[in-house]
Each structure stands twice: as structure tokens, then as C-alpha cells.
Amino acid sequence: MSRIGKNPISVPAGVKVAFDEKGRLFKASGPQGALEFVVRPEIKVDIKGSTIEVGRVDDSRLARSLHGLTRTLAANMVQGVATGFEKRLEIVGVGYKADVAGSMVNLALGFSHPVKYELPKGITASVDKQTSLLIKGPDKQLVGHVAANIRSFRPPEPYKGKGIKYANEVIRRKAGKAGKAAGGK
Image 1 (cartoon, rainbow, N blue to C red):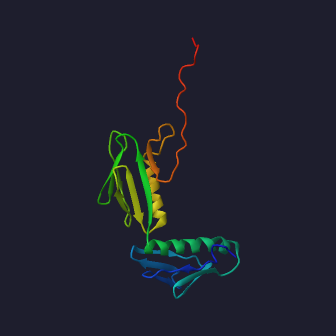
Image 2 (spheres, helix red, strand yellow; image 1 turned 90 degrees about the horizontal axis):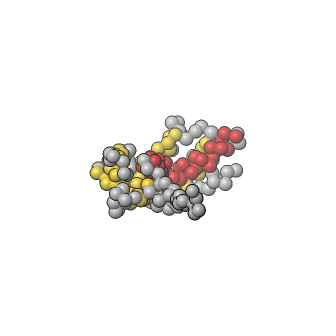
Image 3 (cartoon, rainbow, N blue to C red; image 1 turned 30 degrees about the vertical axis):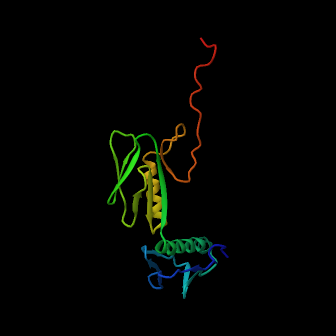
């Protein structure tokens, strides 16, 4: 039995979950939005009051591999529509800054042109200072994808640490040039 898959998912107050047995569609809606995904036929989902139990139809290799994954996806959906997910990005560098206008993120990253990034539906961004960007949304995968896309415009470099990095990311620094060797020609 899957150690992750056998754990029940508790549904917090204010979150509605539904599973359509015929269409195999699992839906979750709450204060942060609504999400849905199609459950594979090898997996069964039972909603009992305020708990969700994910099981498998048989002990085939495919069903065993999908068991924990489906449970984790369902748990992330429930948590996402209840409280949401967020990723914080920090921008390091002289003159590097970010600005949010509606669903457009404008970045000044030392290029000859400003970098503009259109946020997908359901994702919001806010700027605390000009160098700190917060990405929020109910879909964990989409929040991480947007943060990774923004980080890819200028990943942190190892010499001075300039670029866009996650707030909890540690940049391994390299020593620069040692200089001219003593006693050389």
C-alpha cells in the first residue's frame, strides 16, 4: 500500500469537493477559486463527509504508481482552493527592479529593453519593494511554473549573485580572477 496514498485528506470548512464517477472528474472549489482534474480509471476516490480517501482498483504496477500521485494532487487542490500557494522571488542587482500593472509583470533586468511577462488566468503578482516579487494562486503547479519562467529571464550568476532568485535559494559563490601572478614576465 502506498504510504502517501493511504492517508485521508481532510477538507477544511468552506471548501466543496465533488467526484463525478462517470466522467472521472474531481472538482474542488473554495474561497481562492475552483480547480478540477481527471482521475485515471485505475484509481477510486471516496468522499465521506469532510474526508477524501483515495484508493486503487487493483494492485497493478500502473495503479500502484498512480495512487500516491493522485492523492497528492487532490490534497494540493484542496489546500490551493482553501488557502492558496505562493512563491517569493528576489531581484538582486543594481538597477534591477519589478513592477506589476494588472496582469502584466514589467521587469528591468539590465537588458537594453524591459522584459514583459503576461500572468496566466488565476495567478496574481504583487511587488513589496521594487526588488521582491510575490506570485500567488490556487494551483501549485502553475504558481511554480510562473515563478520558474520569471526566474529564467535572468537566473542568478555565481560571481556577484545578480539576477532573479527564489527567496529561500542559496547561491553558491565562485571566486573571481585571482589577479596577476607575482614575479611574472
